[in-house]
Image 1 (cartoon, rainbow, N blue to C red):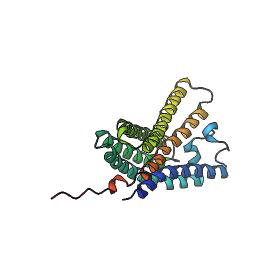
Image 2 (cartoon, helix red, strand yellow):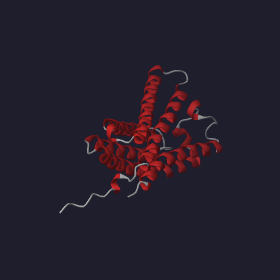
Image 3 (cartoon, rainbow, N blue to C red):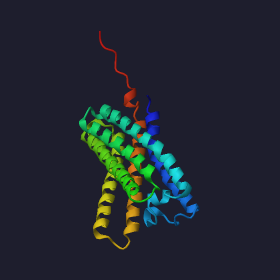
Image 4 (cartoon, rainbow, N blue to C red):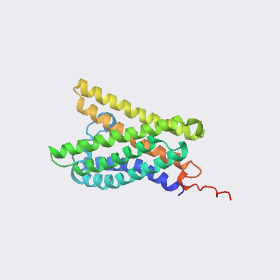
Length: 232
């Protein structure tokens, strides 16, 4: 396996959700389901609200379902890459399982999006909370492992890892902002929570995009390296 296929999978995990969300918002805007704004700074609608109605829901579900599979593959590849780069560690396996559970939670969220209230809303909220929370923890474990072995990493690899750390830090920052909003409950609570959601999401998927560059810039993806023949 060369670095091209793993890099493509990592980049798809960044590009597909961006296409799903922006495409769904554009369709909802065209069909009059949402108002026009720049949701990253105005928060006129949530990600769920942009994809919940009309044809937007079909596009969103149609992209989120295969994305969950791509995410599971990504975390398996990340586990291999970390093991080869840093060495076998328990936290790599923990990150793998957190990532896979996060991918499965995305299926739960997408499947119940657009359904009625009550149980369906509970399942949707459970899916999105587990998806975001477990992916963030998995990303944090990966960055922590790489920084602990930074003396083994080339300078260009370490620069990209620092970018990943910045994105993980932004997610934690937005998480604290969300908690503050829940506690203070300002008059603009709805818009503020939507702004947090949009910005949290782009920071999360940006992590996968940087992984694509990390793997691409390796001379060979670790799983493709062959061991020297045994000495007779």
